[in-house]
Image (cartoon, rainbow, N blue to C red; front, side, top):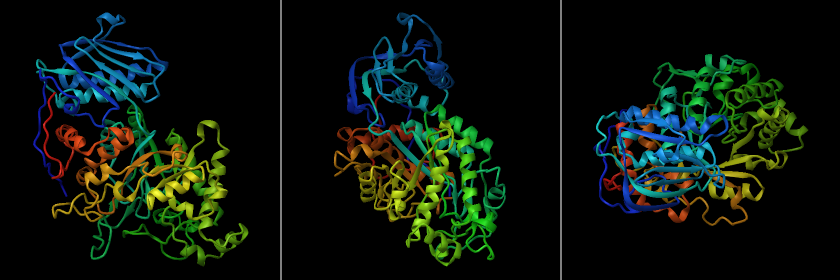
Length: 553
């Protein structure tokens, strides 16, 4: 299904009119914004002075900005060491937190202060939003005679350290180019964690060299459409996966935008694709037929956690993940893991007795404990923190310890509090309203998806992450995350249509302090940003509840 744009394109050029803070459309909303007299006028050339830093990383951030500016406008930016000649200055301020920045635009100069490359990157993202929208959109133009920036002072820093988006590609595969587009959109809104759900009952999407059948068999199924209710499999050969070369390319791309990628290998549940690839040691019933699942829902075909070869499999998959993703976290799933087959398997029953439990869910916890202990044996640069969905709290998590992170989705507020009380870090990704694959209105024109149209932009925006959370527990709340599950979504255009502008609403919850968030303000500010995205060819739905508010520049 190809989604059409619902909004006319805008070309927002400079204006000599004095603006108010409310008229400057920045998303997310900065912590402090002051509008001053005058405007910064562009010329054909600009000189910039960039502070030195370890590995010249601040200069590399600025070089990327320079390239975008020149490609869109023809304006050339050259370097100078003399501050008096510089019209753009990037200056170190060690007193600022890692992701914080100060941006001062005057008639004479654009001055940016930060303590780390990330702060400079976010400041430049803000600067691009102050520019005409074709600059952000990458639409080349030679006419910049009218271009100017409003004179402003901005002091800004994120509310939460984790500002995430999760994309499920286990059920439907979108490919390398679309993932880069998703990363681009995250970067616009200063999001910094891409949670990549790479395995499911319906598909295994990452090359693991030790186990080639995971992609030879597990990455393919005999239906593009997943069966549900009256919807039947279509018989089409469907699938795809990322080679390790692809993964490295995407990781490098995300790093340049200060986005960490968290790979998720969902085990031992949601693993039918893996079981179909290696039933001889992953299946609880290897004598039966196993295939990549063609349906929606929750498969009971889970990994046999009592088989030593299954444990070895999981360790060796983690080995390759560690090499591919040089970041802090690995997500091992843990949600919706039926115990039916464990209850009928002699090996599993024996193991449960050996660990002194009668709760079959503890087999899952024991499985994770072994993997956690294995990761602890690795060299320091290969250490990874583990993340789990909140269902793991249904087992005896005391054997796991509290140095894990709980991603709270179902009964999210209660689950997050439970995790925090146990000393575990937590990330809020509530099913309602942060599952942004769900229908965003009740209109019959909405594409096929989950939900009842109650996850509107307004509902997403107005969710309060720390509402009624005791001050003593708040340090355990690391941030927020939007999730996108793809049972019904087969095309990139539908993915983008459902994401936007709800992704921006979640991003603002992650970045902007609660006292500076306002729904009416967001409606006005998001409009020019959506117009810019459409110029890039992104499929955008502008909900009817968002009035069109063309902004001055």
